[in-house]
Image (cartoon, rainbow, N blue to C red; front, side, top):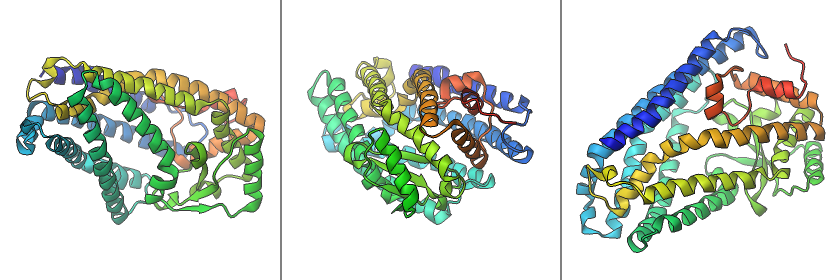
Length: 396
């Protein structure tokens, strides 16, 4: 019970308190800015609704944590027969835990996508498409979880300092996934078509050339079949790098505004922010594996400590450990965003970037106000009002 108490006290309660602070702050923020009055109220209601949902989700996660630690792992060990010490049984235990946990949280995910986001006009995902996406996600989960858990269980069984080798292995796999994601994984869920506007393509290529960025193509993603929100990004590593524009974006911003958005993204490349983010991720992963490799005995009071149960406890506590890294990660991320805004506005101009940011918040119905503790923990980007002020953008 001790580890469950630690999880609730140091994770569930703080998460819920931050959400409550955010809700109160949103309710008290009545000065209409950037958005018109109607959209301001829509954004306000959506922000409050998502925070209430986050509280419920956090409490549900705590219930699942207590269930697994006190009952679930013991029952699953009995069913999977992990006491025989066969590595296959351990792999089945880990994969079964991940599948069961995913199934138990599936109703929450479905409610967020098919109910909340649909009510507020964001989600366009049909039930059929959601089921197809879920099946694909489960297949990928089973494949990757089986391979990775087998490798980690082997390390735990054969090396006393397994967590060091485990960290290196997982880190390399994460980098590999980032490498193949744009060309192999992402196309499983979305269609990517080459940009047909040759004039825009030429301008984007010229901008990329000015900072020494080489991409393996500029693509339009059919994001509109799932969501109405706008976005654009540079994905991949090495030769797999590509420019991805949401089809929802092209019809909402001008060419100059789009170039300003891409100029902001190019700044992250120029400033080597991706390398820095990988370094930060390595620190977080290392810390997580260090803690998992040195867990106290009370973490396994309700079930037998085996290589597979160690992995599952590691998965359960990952949200707790990551939570306390968020302020550090997001602090440096916000600094990088300010620098990217400055760089991007110099590639184009501050007015175009400011106009683009305003359109993004209008189309995405993002509420412009946030409590400072919410910003401190969760926001990887500075509040939009602060970004616009830094750009000397004049807004009402």
